[in-house]
Amino acid sequence: MTDRDTPKGRTEALASDGPTILDALPHPVLLVAPDGVIESANMAAEFFMRSSISVLRRHPINEFIPFGSPLLTLIDQVRERGAAVNEYKVDIGSPRIGAPKIVDINAAPVANRPGAVVLMFQERTMAEKIDRQLTSRGAARTVTGLAAMLAHEIKNPLSGIRGAAQLLEQSAPDEDRALTRLITDETDRIVKLVDRMEVFSDERPIERDPVNIHVVLDHVKRLSDSGFARDNRITENYDPSLPPVYANKDQLIQVFLNLIKNASEAIGDDPDGEIRVSTAFRPGVRLSVPGTEDKVSLPLEFCVQDNGPGVPEDLLPHLFEPFITTKTNGSGLGLALVAKIIGDHGGVIECDSQRGKTVFRILMPAYSTTDSGSGTGAV
Image (cartoon, rainbow, N blue to C red; front, top):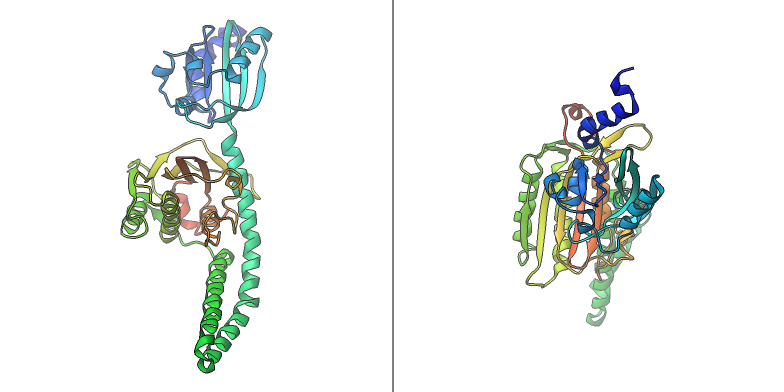
């Protein structure tokens, strides 16, 4: 038996190999010393805490979390019991690391280090949002069947109603022609709504190519600046090193036009309104592919953020479902269509919203040479 095989040797080996091993984990891991100072952290923890390891090592854990946080009590319990303790759905959000931050916490003592505690966080928000996204996709599939039925059963009678109204208008007195025009206009509006819903029933494979997302976003910004967002300030924060995304360029343009239009409408006439578009590389998010054991990595993050009034809290979980809208004259299909397009590309879209900060975040897979022969990205 070598020294490395003894308990002491295994501890020392983990200490030396630990940073490499822990950096491979997608979950934040922190080592808190007996005096409460953060002693070590993996790469996921640096991103989560919004601080580098050199900064983390100079501060106690309580400077990063809210005053009176249950996390501090959890650390004390681990020290008192000398055993691991788990806590679920703990909000440790703060101005320093961002809010809200709902996490499951696993806290455990360190062998041969009395008072030292290892913390591992698992974000609840991501898992719950992906679950909601999959639920929204199921709702969209329900709309798919409804759309196909509407196209067949409603559009044909509507054309007859419109034709009859036009015939009546030719012989109707002036005071009645307003009513025939109303019938015609409302018929046209219903047809347009059904046409929009027909998009959900389009199950053809997506024609995709490697796409530079920044070319798409620059094009969308030019369209927005000359149209609906001419009175809003649009700023960019791009990662120029991002690999291409395997996508349909036209559909991505449709997605970001929709999101920026929504952001512009949310801001309204606020002179301080700002729309922020950003791209980043975020490793660690993996999504199971239904019907298989495969998992797809979603490292590309595209965000559209506005400083409008925010989405009502009761509406947020249902935001990507069809017919859900806060607009007086909205159809509630825009975000459902966005979710369908992103889902067909193998990605997910989520929304974080509070007053003054609403972020639509899209996570998508990066292009690889094996994608060229697939031809479709439906999930």
